[in-house]
Length: 396
Image (cartoon, rainbow, N blue to C red; front, side):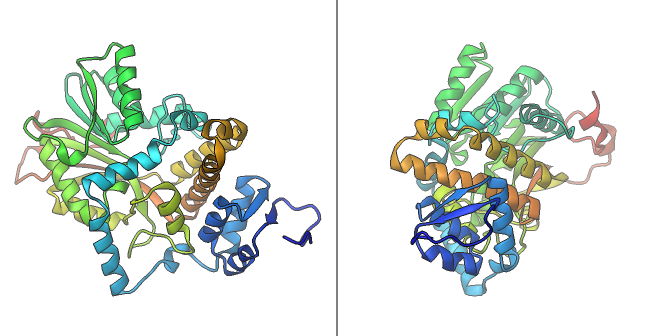
Protein backbone atom coordinates (compact mmCIF):
# COMPACT_ATOMS: atom_id res chain seq x y z
CA UNK A 1 0.00 0.00 0.00
CA UNK A 2 1.13 3.66 -0.39
CA UNK A 3 1.66 3.93 3.39
CA UNK A 4 3.89 0.85 3.46
CA UNK A 5 1.25 -1.55 4.81
CA UNK A 6 1.17 -5.07 3.34
CA UNK A 7 -2.00 -7.09 2.75
CA UNK A 8 -2.46 -10.68 1.67
CA UNK A 9 -0.43 -13.87 1.60
CA UNK A 10 3.18 -13.72 2.76
CA UNK A 11 4.40 -15.67 -0.30
CA UNK A 12 2.14 -14.63 -3.21
CA UNK A 13 2.56 -15.60 -6.85
CA UNK A 14 1.72 -12.00 -7.80
CA UNK A 15 2.46 -8.89 -5.76
CA UNK A 16 1.02 -5.43 -6.52
CA UNK A 17 2.82 -2.32 -5.32
CA UNK A 18 0.06 0.28 -5.02
CA UNK A 19 1.09 3.89 -5.62
CA UNK A 20 -2.38 5.41 -6.12
CA UNK A 21 -5.37 4.40 -3.97
CA UNK A 22 -7.77 4.68 -6.94
CA UNK A 23 -6.28 1.36 -8.07
CA UNK A 24 -8.06 -0.33 -5.14
CA UNK A 25 -11.47 0.84 -6.36
CA UNK A 26 -10.78 -0.56 -9.84
CA UNK A 27 -9.65 -3.85 -8.30
CA UNK A 28 -12.85 -4.08 -6.27
CA UNK A 29 -14.99 -3.30 -9.35
CA UNK A 30 -13.15 -5.83 -11.54
CA UNK A 31 -12.27 -3.18 -14.12
CA UNK A 32 -9.40 -5.12 -15.68
CA UNK A 33 -8.94 -2.77 -18.63
CA UNK A 34 -8.92 0.30 -16.39
CA UNK A 35 -6.29 -1.41 -14.25
CA UNK A 36 -4.25 -1.89 -17.43
CA UNK A 37 -4.40 1.86 -18.01
CA UNK A 38 -3.40 2.49 -14.38
CA UNK A 39 -0.38 0.21 -14.83
CA UNK A 40 0.72 2.07 -17.98
CA UNK A 41 0.41 5.37 -16.10
CA UNK A 42 2.59 4.04 -13.27
CA UNK A 43 -0.12 3.94 -10.60
CA UNK A 44 0.98 0.45 -9.51
CA UNK A 45 3.80 -2.01 -10.23
CA UNK A 46 3.77 -5.79 -10.47
CA UNK A 47 6.05 -8.55 -9.21
CA UNK A 48 5.25 -11.86 -10.89
CA UNK A 49 4.74 -13.33 -14.34
CA UNK A 50 2.29 -11.88 -16.83
CA UNK A 51 0.69 -15.32 -17.10
CA UNK A 52 -0.11 -15.29 -13.36
CA UNK A 53 -1.23 -11.66 -13.53
CA UNK A 54 -3.76 -12.55 -16.24
CA UNK A 55 -5.18 -15.28 -14.00
CA UNK A 56 -5.80 -12.54 -11.44
CA UNK A 57 -7.38 -10.31 -14.09
CA UNK A 58 -9.76 -13.07 -15.20
CA UNK A 59 -10.66 -13.90 -11.59
CA UNK A 60 -11.65 -10.35 -10.59
CA UNK A 61 -13.99 -9.77 -13.55
CA UNK A 62 -17.62 -9.57 -12.38
CA UNK A 63 -18.77 -11.30 -15.59
CA UNK A 64 -18.01 -11.73 -19.26
CA UNK A 65 -16.54 -8.54 -20.80
CA UNK A 66 -18.45 -9.45 -23.97
CA UNK A 67 -21.78 -9.09 -22.18
CA UNK A 68 -20.58 -6.03 -20.25
CA UNK A 69 -20.04 -4.18 -23.52
CA UNK A 70 -23.70 -4.33 -24.64
CA UNK A 71 -25.34 -0.96 -25.21
CA UNK A 72 -28.68 0.35 -26.37
CA UNK A 73 -29.73 1.66 -29.78
CA UNK A 74 -28.32 5.14 -29.13
CA UNK A 75 -24.92 3.71 -28.14
CA UNK A 76 -24.87 1.61 -31.30
CA UNK A 77 -25.76 4.67 -33.41
CA UNK A 78 -22.92 6.69 -31.87
CA UNK A 79 -20.49 3.84 -32.53
CA UNK A 80 -21.53 3.68 -36.17
CA UNK A 81 -21.11 7.44 -36.65
CA UNK A 82 -17.68 7.28 -34.98
CA UNK A 83 -16.72 4.33 -37.21
CA UNK A 84 -17.41 6.40 -40.31
CA UNK A 85 -15.64 9.50 -38.96
CA UNK A 86 -12.47 7.85 -37.70
CA UNK A 87 -11.55 5.97 -40.92
CA UNK A 88 -10.64 8.56 -43.50
CA UNK A 89 -7.52 7.81 -45.55
CA UNK A 90 -5.53 10.40 -43.59
CA UNK A 91 -6.67 9.20 -40.14
CA UNK A 92 -6.01 5.55 -41.00
CA UNK A 93 -2.46 6.42 -42.06
CA UNK A 94 -1.80 8.22 -38.76
CA UNK A 95 -3.30 5.37 -36.74
CA UNK A 96 -1.18 2.74 -38.49
CA UNK A 97 1.98 4.79 -37.99
CA UNK A 98 1.12 5.13 -34.27
CA UNK A 99 1.32 1.35 -33.84
CA UNK A 100 3.61 -0.12 -36.48
CA UNK A 101 6.23 2.63 -36.56
CA UNK A 102 6.95 2.45 -32.83
CA UNK A 103 10.36 0.77 -33.39
CA UNK A 104 11.40 -2.02 -35.75
CA UNK A 105 14.08 -3.10 -33.27
CA UNK A 106 11.47 -3.38 -30.50
CA UNK A 107 9.24 -5.67 -32.58
CA UNK A 108 12.28 -7.74 -33.61
CA UNK A 109 12.88 -8.57 -29.92
CA UNK A 110 9.75 -10.70 -29.60
CA UNK A 111 8.54 -11.59 -33.10
CA UNK A 112 9.92 -14.53 -35.11
CA UNK A 113 12.86 -13.92 -37.51
CA UNK A 114 10.45 -13.16 -40.38
CA UNK A 115 8.63 -10.61 -38.19
CA UNK A 116 5.23 -12.12 -38.91
CA UNK A 117 2.90 -10.03 -36.75
CA UNK A 118 -0.28 -12.12 -36.98
CA UNK A 119 -1.71 -15.41 -35.74
CA UNK A 120 0.59 -18.40 -36.28
CA UNK A 121 -0.64 -21.87 -37.28
CA UNK A 122 0.56 -24.62 -34.94
CA UNK A 123 0.17 -27.47 -37.37
CA UNK A 124 2.00 -29.66 -34.82
CA UNK A 125 1.59 -29.04 -31.06
CA UNK A 126 5.35 -28.85 -30.39
CA UNK A 127 6.19 -26.34 -33.13
CA UNK A 128 8.29 -23.32 -32.25
CA UNK A 129 6.82 -19.90 -33.01
CA UNK A 130 9.07 -19.55 -36.07
CA UNK A 131 7.96 -22.93 -37.41
CA UNK A 132 4.30 -22.14 -36.75
CA UNK A 133 4.57 -18.81 -38.55
CA UNK A 134 6.04 -20.50 -41.63
CA UNK A 135 3.25 -23.09 -41.41
CA UNK A 136 0.73 -20.21 -41.38
CA UNK A 137 2.29 -18.57 -44.43
CA UNK A 138 2.13 -21.85 -46.31
CA UNK A 139 -1.40 -22.56 -45.07
CA UNK A 140 -2.56 -19.30 -46.66
CA UNK A 141 -0.68 -19.95 -49.91
CA UNK A 142 -2.17 -23.44 -50.18
CA UNK A 143 -5.69 -22.18 -49.51
CA UNK A 144 -5.22 -19.58 -52.24
CA UNK A 145 -3.79 -22.26 -54.56
CA UNK A 146 -0.99 -19.94 -55.63
CA UNK A 147 0.79 -20.99 -58.81
CA UNK A 148 3.82 -19.67 -60.66
CA UNK A 149 3.29 -16.46 -62.60
CA UNK A 150 0.03 -15.45 -60.93
CA UNK A 151 -0.47 -11.83 -59.90
CA UNK A 152 -0.71 -11.82 -56.10
CA UNK A 153 -1.68 -8.85 -53.91
CA UNK A 154 -0.92 -8.70 -50.16
CA UNK A 155 -2.94 -5.94 -48.47
CA UNK A 156 -1.32 -4.80 -45.24
CA UNK A 157 1.86 -6.75 -45.98
CA UNK A 158 3.63 -5.88 -42.72
CA UNK A 159 7.31 -6.78 -42.70
CA UNK A 160 6.88 -8.85 -45.86
CA UNK A 161 6.62 -12.38 -44.46
CA UNK A 162 3.77 -13.59 -46.67
CA UNK A 163 4.79 -11.45 -49.66
CA UNK A 164 8.29 -12.93 -49.80
CA UNK A 165 7.19 -16.47 -48.90
CA UNK A 166 4.69 -16.49 -51.77
CA UNK A 167 7.25 -15.12 -54.23
CA UNK A 168 10.10 -17.43 -53.22
CA UNK A 169 8.11 -20.64 -52.72
CA UNK A 170 5.28 -20.28 -55.24
CA UNK A 171 6.82 -18.13 -57.97
CA UNK A 172 4.10 -15.48 -58.02
CA UNK A 173 4.42 -11.88 -59.19
CA UNK A 174 3.80 -10.22 -55.83
CA UNK A 175 2.64 -6.75 -54.83
CA UNK A 176 2.36 -5.62 -51.22
CA UNK A 177 0.96 -2.44 -49.71
CA UNK A 178 1.32 -0.89 -46.25
CA UNK A 179 0.67 2.41 -44.49
CA UNK A 180 3.77 2.02 -42.29
CA UNK A 181 6.83 3.89 -43.49
CA UNK A 182 9.14 1.66 -41.43
CA UNK A 183 7.69 -1.51 -42.94
CA UNK A 184 7.77 -0.05 -46.45
CA UNK A 185 11.50 0.74 -46.19
CA UNK A 186 12.32 -2.59 -44.52
CA UNK A 187 10.56 -4.78 -47.10
CA UNK A 188 11.96 -2.91 -50.09
CA UNK A 189 15.43 -3.46 -48.63
CA UNK A 190 14.72 -7.21 -48.37
CA UNK A 191 13.44 -7.29 -51.95
CA UNK A 192 16.75 -5.79 -53.15
CA UNK A 193 18.87 -8.09 -50.99
CA UNK A 194 17.10 -11.22 -52.23
CA UNK A 195 17.24 -10.27 -55.89
CA UNK A 196 13.46 -10.11 -56.28
CA UNK A 197 13.23 -6.66 -57.87
CA UNK A 198 10.93 -6.70 -60.87
CA UNK A 199 8.88 -9.63 -59.55
CA UNK A 200 8.11 -8.30 -56.05
CA UNK A 201 7.25 -4.75 -55.03
CA UNK A 202 6.06 -2.98 -51.88
CA UNK A 203 4.08 0.27 -52.03
CA UNK A 204 3.27 2.84 -49.34
CA UNK A 205 -0.41 2.98 -50.26
CA UNK A 206 -3.96 2.81 -48.92
CA UNK A 207 -6.03 -0.05 -50.34
CA UNK A 208 -8.64 2.48 -51.46
CA UNK A 209 -6.09 4.02 -53.84
CA UNK A 210 -5.19 0.79 -55.65
CA UNK A 211 -5.86 0.86 -59.38
CA UNK A 212 -8.38 -1.76 -60.51
CA UNK A 213 -7.39 -1.70 -64.19
CA UNK A 214 -5.38 -4.94 -64.17
CA UNK A 215 -7.04 -7.40 -61.77
CA UNK A 216 -5.12 -9.77 -59.51
CA UNK A 217 -5.43 -13.56 -59.59
CA UNK A 218 -5.23 -13.92 -55.81
CA UNK A 219 -5.45 -11.46 -52.90
CA UNK A 220 -4.52 -11.87 -49.23
CA UNK A 221 -5.41 -9.48 -46.41
CA UNK A 222 -3.83 -10.58 -43.12
CA UNK A 223 -4.34 -8.71 -39.87
CA UNK A 224 -5.54 -5.64 -41.71
CA UNK A 225 -9.34 -5.53 -41.85
CA UNK A 226 -9.50 -4.87 -38.08
CA UNK A 227 -8.38 -1.35 -39.00
CA UNK A 228 -11.06 -0.84 -41.68
CA UNK A 229 -13.98 -0.06 -39.36
CA UNK A 230 -17.33 -1.80 -39.05
CA UNK A 231 -19.17 0.87 -41.07
CA UNK A 232 -16.67 0.51 -43.96
CA UNK A 233 -16.61 -3.30 -44.24
CA UNK A 234 -19.01 -3.59 -47.19
CA UNK A 235 -17.01 -1.00 -49.13
CA UNK A 236 -13.78 -2.77 -48.20
CA UNK A 237 -14.95 -6.13 -49.53
CA UNK A 238 -16.44 -4.48 -52.60
CA UNK A 239 -13.08 -2.86 -53.31
CA UNK A 240 -11.29 -6.21 -52.98
CA UNK A 241 -13.84 -7.75 -55.34
CA UNK A 242 -13.11 -5.03 -57.92
CA UNK A 243 -9.38 -5.78 -57.68
CA UNK A 244 -9.85 -9.52 -58.26
CA UNK A 245 -10.29 -11.30 -61.58
CA UNK A 246 -13.49 -13.34 -62.06
CA UNK A 247 -12.87 -16.78 -60.60
CA UNK A 248 -9.95 -15.60 -58.44
CA UNK A 249 -9.62 -16.05 -54.68
CA UNK A 250 -9.36 -13.76 -51.65
CA UNK A 251 -8.06 -14.80 -48.23
CA UNK A 252 -9.19 -12.48 -45.41
CA UNK A 253 -7.42 -13.34 -42.15
CA UNK A 254 -8.31 -11.23 -39.13
CA UNK A 255 -9.51 -10.88 -35.55
CA UNK A 256 -13.25 -11.09 -34.99
CA UNK A 257 -15.42 -10.21 -31.99
CA UNK A 258 -16.79 -12.77 -29.58
CA UNK A 259 -20.00 -10.78 -29.12
CA UNK A 260 -22.65 -10.55 -31.82
CA UNK A 261 -23.85 -7.04 -30.95
CA UNK A 262 -20.53 -5.22 -31.39
CA UNK A 263 -16.81 -5.72 -31.04
CA UNK A 264 -15.52 -3.67 -28.12
CA UNK A 265 -14.99 -5.52 -24.85
CA UNK A 266 -16.27 -4.13 -21.55
CA UNK A 267 -14.49 -3.70 -18.19
CA UNK A 268 -12.33 -1.01 -19.81
CA UNK A 269 -10.56 -3.49 -22.11
CA UNK A 270 -11.72 -1.93 -25.35
CA UNK A 271 -10.74 1.54 -24.17
CA UNK A 272 -7.26 0.29 -23.24
CA UNK A 273 -6.62 -1.10 -26.75
CA UNK A 274 -8.02 2.07 -28.36
CA UNK A 275 -5.90 4.40 -26.26
CA UNK A 276 -2.53 2.66 -26.12
CA UNK A 277 -2.30 0.09 -28.91
CA UNK A 278 -4.65 0.29 -31.91
CA UNK A 279 -6.39 3.67 -32.16
CA UNK A 280 -9.24 3.27 -34.64
CA UNK A 281 -9.25 -0.52 -34.45
CA UNK A 282 -12.72 -2.13 -34.52
CA UNK A 283 -13.69 -5.78 -34.20
CA UNK A 284 -16.79 -7.34 -35.74
CA UNK A 285 -18.49 -10.68 -35.18
CA UNK A 286 -18.00 -13.23 -37.96
CA UNK A 287 -21.73 -13.07 -38.72
CA UNK A 288 -21.56 -9.38 -39.57
CA UNK A 289 -18.31 -9.90 -41.49
CA UNK A 290 -19.99 -12.47 -43.73
CA UNK A 291 -22.95 -10.16 -44.29
CA UNK A 292 -20.61 -7.36 -45.38
CA UNK A 293 -18.60 -9.76 -47.55
CA UNK A 294 -21.74 -10.93 -49.34
CA UNK A 295 -23.05 -7.39 -49.80
CA UNK A 296 -19.64 -6.54 -51.25
CA UNK A 297 -20.12 -9.01 -54.10
CA UNK A 298 -18.20 -12.02 -52.74
CA UNK A 299 -19.09 -15.61 -51.90
CA UNK A 300 -17.48 -17.34 -48.92
CA UNK A 301 -16.16 -20.81 -49.82
CA UNK A 302 -14.10 -21.78 -46.76
CA UNK A 303 -14.07 -20.49 -43.16
CA UNK A 304 -11.66 -21.55 -40.40
CA UNK A 305 -11.51 -20.32 -36.81
CA UNK A 306 -7.93 -20.19 -35.46
CA UNK A 307 -8.78 -18.77 -32.02
CA UNK A 308 -6.57 -21.08 -29.86
CA UNK A 309 -3.73 -20.69 -32.35
CA UNK A 310 -3.72 -16.97 -31.64
CA UNK A 311 -3.76 -17.51 -27.87
CA UNK A 312 -0.60 -19.62 -28.19
CA UNK A 313 0.96 -17.08 -30.58
CA UNK A 314 0.34 -14.20 -28.18
CA UNK A 315 1.75 -16.09 -25.21
CA UNK A 316 4.86 -16.82 -27.26
CA UNK A 317 5.20 -13.09 -28.01
CA UNK A 318 4.52 -12.17 -24.39
CA UNK A 319 7.07 -14.66 -23.03
CA UNK A 320 9.68 -13.45 -25.52
CA UNK A 321 9.15 -9.81 -24.52
CA UNK A 322 9.22 -10.64 -20.80
CA UNK A 323 12.58 -12.38 -21.33
CA UNK A 324 14.03 -9.24 -22.94
CA UNK A 325 12.68 -6.38 -20.84
CA UNK A 326 16.10 -4.70 -20.29
CA UNK A 327 16.77 -4.66 -24.06
CA UNK A 328 13.25 -3.33 -24.69
CA UNK A 329 13.78 -0.47 -22.23
CA UNK A 330 17.07 0.41 -23.88
CA UNK A 331 15.48 0.45 -27.35
CA UNK A 332 12.40 2.47 -26.44
CA UNK A 333 14.14 4.77 -23.97
CA UNK A 334 12.82 7.48 -21.67
CA UNK A 335 9.54 7.99 -19.86
CA UNK A 336 7.37 7.58 -22.96
CA UNK A 337 9.27 4.44 -23.89
CA UNK A 338 8.54 2.96 -20.46
CA UNK A 339 4.83 3.73 -20.93
CA UNK A 340 4.87 2.00 -24.32
CA UNK A 341 6.62 -1.04 -22.86
CA UNK A 342 4.09 -1.29 -20.02
CA UNK A 343 1.26 -1.01 -22.54
CA UNK A 344 2.64 -3.81 -24.70
CA UNK A 345 3.21 -6.09 -21.71
CA UNK A 346 -0.47 -5.73 -20.78
CA UNK A 347 -1.66 -5.87 -24.38
CA UNK A 348 0.09 -9.12 -25.37
CA UNK A 349 -0.80 -11.03 -22.20
CA UNK A 350 -4.32 -9.58 -22.02
CA UNK A 351 -5.10 -10.53 -25.62
CA UNK A 352 -3.76 -14.04 -25.03
CA UNK A 353 -6.21 -14.32 -22.13
CA UNK A 354 -9.02 -12.93 -24.32
CA UNK A 355 -8.51 -15.57 -26.99
CA UNK A 356 -8.30 -18.35 -24.40
CA UNK A 357 -11.65 -17.28 -22.93
CA UNK A 358 -13.31 -16.89 -26.34
CA UNK A 359 -13.95 -13.17 -25.92
CA UNK A 360 -12.30 -12.64 -29.31
CA UNK A 361 -11.53 -14.98 -32.20
CA UNK A 362 -9.52 -15.20 -35.42
CA UNK A 363 -11.13 -16.24 -38.69
CA UNK A 364 -9.67 -17.05 -42.08
CA UNK A 365 -12.28 -16.53 -44.78
CA UNK A 366 -11.62 -17.75 -48.31
CA UNK A 367 -13.90 -16.06 -50.84
CA UNK A 368 -14.43 -15.61 -54.55
CA UNK A 369 -16.54 -13.23 -56.66
CA UNK A 370 -20.13 -14.44 -56.82
CA UNK A 371 -20.79 -16.44 -59.97
CA UNK A 372 -24.02 -16.85 -61.96
CA UNK A 373 -25.40 -20.29 -62.76
CA UNK A 374 -22.73 -22.73 -63.99
CA UNK A 375 -22.90 -26.49 -64.31
CA UNK A 376 -19.13 -27.10 -64.55
CA UNK A 377 -17.86 -25.81 -61.18
CA UNK A 378 -16.97 -29.31 -59.92
CA UNK A 379 -15.10 -30.14 -63.15
CA UNK A 380 -12.10 -27.87 -62.32
CA UNK A 381 -12.59 -25.35 -65.14
CA UNK A 382 -9.43 -23.30 -65.73
CA UNK A 383 -11.07 -19.93 -65.08
CA UNK A 384 -12.20 -20.89 -61.54
CA UNK A 385 -9.56 -21.18 -58.80
CA UNK A 386 -11.59 -22.88 -56.08
CA UNK A 387 -11.99 -26.67 -56.54
CA UNK A 388 -14.84 -27.18 -54.01
CA UNK A 389 -12.78 -29.91 -52.32
CA UNK A 390 -10.52 -29.32 -49.32
CA UNK A 391 -7.92 -31.99 -49.99
CA UNK A 392 -5.84 -29.58 -52.11
CA UNK A 393 -4.87 -27.67 -48.95
CA UNK A 394 -3.20 -30.68 -47.34
CA UNK A 395 -1.71 -32.47 -50.34
CA UNK A 396 2.10 -32.48 -50.30
